Image 1 (cartoon, helix red, strand yellow):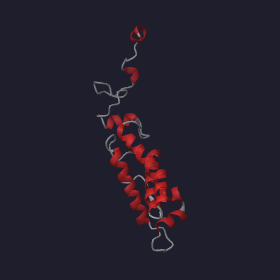
Image 2: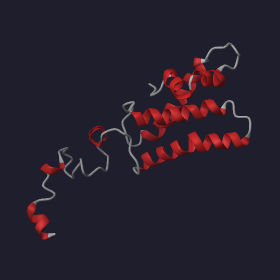
Image 3: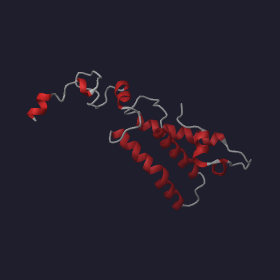
Image 4: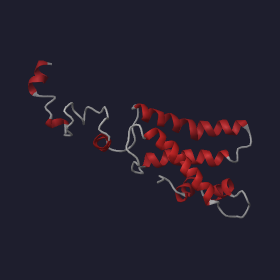
Length: 155
């Protein structure tokens, strides 16, 4: 299951640019196989990092789709890059920032725009102590009594 489609890439790039990037045979039509392959590659890259913290598939939220669209765009634009300068520019614009974000997500330094409770409930090994106290029960922080009046006075 992918997080983005050809329609998403049309929105990202526009019809003219998508045609330029995919019409290898000069038929005048967008080659959807090429677009779908880029979308699948982007999804695979995304999931290879996300699977360490989230149960897959994750919801196709704004951030998830943005990351995948940018990775797919990199793949499509790379097909037409004619110089090393262009390749480096593409990497700086589309690939490296998204890969760094994925690495941060994997390391727990960043999170997807998925509620933490969802991540914790589905993936209980999460170190999220706000939602997952030592006894493993999921409950609001206010019901745990971490900040009782006595504890606050003694502080």
